[in-house]
Length: 236
Image (cartoon, rainbow, N blue to C red; front, side, top):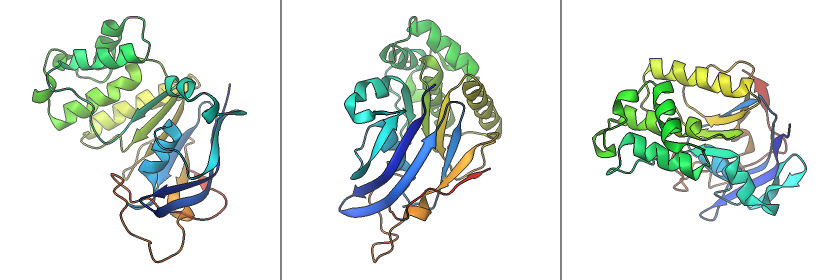
């Protein structure tokens, strides 16, 4: 099974270097946790991994094939869940999820939506319009997207925001099941998420020294920065 890797990545946002010289590799069954202060580039790196941003320098590859050769294929094997809950207020929770399941190529979007809501512990919100959902319910609905349609690579930006401890434990179980089947997970977090054998990537190791350190590039939870040649990945 193929690994996902980036080599010597540099991110430039708003005319400011966010990180540079960043290298990573995620193999089937792996989990990688992105750590670093606000402004270190966690959100930007996840967007680059998802193909939503282009790196200023460096390459991304799925095994030996560069992602730039066929970005649509990469998007089909990737689930990206960012800060914003992509919930349409006029659609019910089930309708929102069925839309994403259909977009992801699910055979039976409505059934996959129901099953995902059940697994996330919120089957009772299926018929509730998005505008009436609480912050925690919207977050669970957004996370249910990773179950509603299959994808090998999960990219999760602060997935525990607005979740209680029980919901975090459930997310940990779902991630473990995904990895057991050969899936890959990369996530950013400011809180502890239990993931056996997960490695950590400290983005502040790649922050370029200079007068711009600590400035904000408008990237949701980070301002994005940069430096150093090789990732510090340690067992957690």
